[in-house]
Image (cartoon, rainbow, N blue to C red):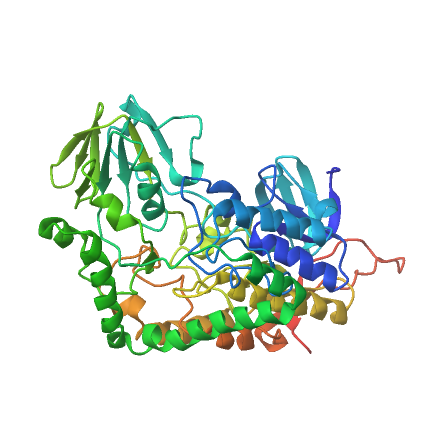
Amino acid sequence: MTEHEHVRVAVIGSGFGGLGAAVRLRREGVTDFVVLERADSVGGTWRDNSYPGCACDVPSHLYSFSFAPNPDWPRTFSGQEHIRAYLEHVADVFRLRSHLRFNSEVKVMTWDGERLRWVIETSSGTLTADVVVSATGPLSDPKVPDVPGIDTFPGKVFHSARWDHDYDLRGKRVAMVGTGASAIQIVPAIQPDVAKLTLFQRTPPWVMPRVDRAVTGAERWLHRQLPFTSQARRGLLWGLRELQVQAFTKRPNELGLVEQLAKRNMARAIKDPELRAKLTPSYRIGCKRILLSSTYYPALAQPNVDVVASGLSEVRGSTVVAADGTEAEVDAIVFGTGFHVTDMPIADRVVGAEGKTLAEAWRTGMKSLRGATAAGFPNWMTIIGPNTGLGNSSMILMIESQLNYMADYVRQLEVLGGRAALDARPGAVDAWNHRVQERMKRTVWNTGGCTSWYLDDNGVNTTIWPGTTTEFRGATRRVDLGEYDLLRPPPEPETASGRRTTKKTKKTVEAGA
């Protein structure tokens, strides 16, 4: 990267969102862009999460781009290594390598109101961009609780998203902290090899069977020879999940039957009534993400596993202590405690038009216009922004909808011509957020009786989309210029000699005026 290189668009991150943005920009005829990546390869969360058993809980043919179908998925639910390989394939097939800037972590990006562009300082140099597309994703920065005494622990400590593959867990006494999507995959993967596994569970998850199998050679041949069969498979998977949305968003009581199926799944593997009581949630299914596993409960029933129905509260030397006083001697602590979702660190690094960071603007809660743009941050948008998450389907569907919005945003700037920027109007952001939160009131995520990572510190659900993916696709199909202020540099003032000076300031006018 050369000093103060200028590009039309800078994309931050090279996971599904970043690579998807890059592909869409090329398809729109925009080739003057870079993809800034802090690591040394593409993949995002599927590069960082390489823990034992790591896999996706969305079917493979739905967890891929519609414009880049993969007829050769080896399993109906793909493992981490296959998804990462798919993203590398996308980077190659769509000729994105020349746009990638690895080892270029964004330190700070600042809006230059005089020149209507972003100044981006990275670990490999500084550049400027007319538009920034932030695709860092909500599952990129691990969240590790501040446990008293953890600094004095003599053993090994790491987060599931920063797995230490050089440390051999075989024969070790291991504490697994957390019972989220990562933990229920890690537990059965390491249970046969460790001497003792102590699972610290604050809240039990609802777990349904994972109906995973190998995709046959005949199926793969058919998808290669007749691509419409792959599209039909994807469409069926999508349609079934669209039909489920009403139960999550409007009629949570209809989920009672699903709870009974989940309890039967547990009862088949957990015969001990005391353990079954520990593992039975007290909240409505769907309030937290429903997890998929056919091996989690059998692993917990093994004699070398203890389930502590309490969170980790203290570490005393090699002794870990739960909030209920339970103690265990361990050699390693693995945190499966999730990520900074409602307080993404990237927000501290974005400085907008008024000189304040995005984190400061979102101090009372994340909110954006159509999950993409924020007031006071012109020509900046995010992929997988506030209230774009899903509780039952594939995030790739939401990402592709946001790519439509991004493409039209860039297209509108081209139509406007010259030096221009669009800044989301505060009223438009508030109106959109109000509609989303009103719809959220009836959903299982707000009424199900749980505390989840969907909620921020104020108890507001700033994460999930309370509707179908079809509705979101319609809401993000086009940019409504009436929801934005158009920024232009003012005319250069004349001097006494009649010549123009070079000083320019920001001018805001109504879009379309």
